[in-house]
Length: 327
Image 1 (cartoon, helix red, strand yellow):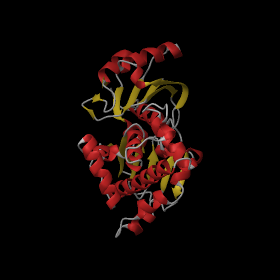
Image 2: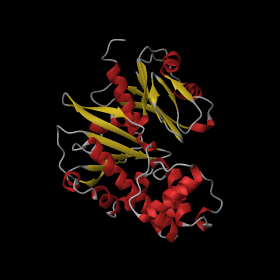
Image 3: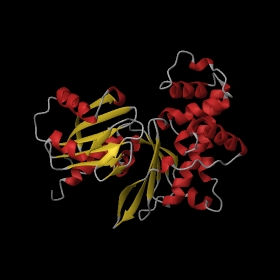
Image 4: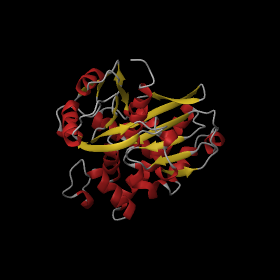
């Protein structure tokens, strides 16, 4: 038996799995609102109660939304510290590990089925190439997958906190607004749920929007997306277009940095909800606008991950691999 987890800034998923070839078999899962708990062990306690766990846990891997250093992570958007040692102690297993959440998600890419992804660009996948994954949600995550000895090996990054690269005069104005509001324009301040709210502020020039009446800040990004997709608010639609274009541009940057000839994957909670906007061509136009490297990027397969449990599956895959190693 193995436990996989995906701890995000908004939602935490935990799953109990059985071993199976390539992709562990999910037996049961639990979903929790992250900031309603004082620590990760509180969520583990509730998971134990809900599944009535009595069997021995042989390995556990938890993906977390933050950097992992020496088996310890301080989550970026939640005031928690999580350690592999406390997870091992709580579950009674010597095989426990923390991964960055995008590193965990990256482990799932080879086992995702055709109905778990949406193709934005077919490309020409090279079996000897690298890959990469980018995911906007509560924050923005990025990870590389380097080809080593014929296999893709995930490598975490904190690229979402790199500087936002403005491409147009309008995006330069956006950077100026972000600098005034938060002191620094990082990619996550544009490409995330809070980032979409920043774009909304920019396109509304600080004015009110009927679409957000009675809506909390946490609910606002979804409402902006809905209003933008439906065309009910032209400034919301403008914000969504800016978001999609910037998302495509940053995905293209990542594909270049990774030389992702085996594929660029778009994960996270936002992309599946705005698929119609991603499919307009705006995302791919920005992705490809990288002369003199356009020809290279035209061959990169680009896919949106539709499975909201991809990070959970990837954590379980890594946990299963731990069982093949000595403790």
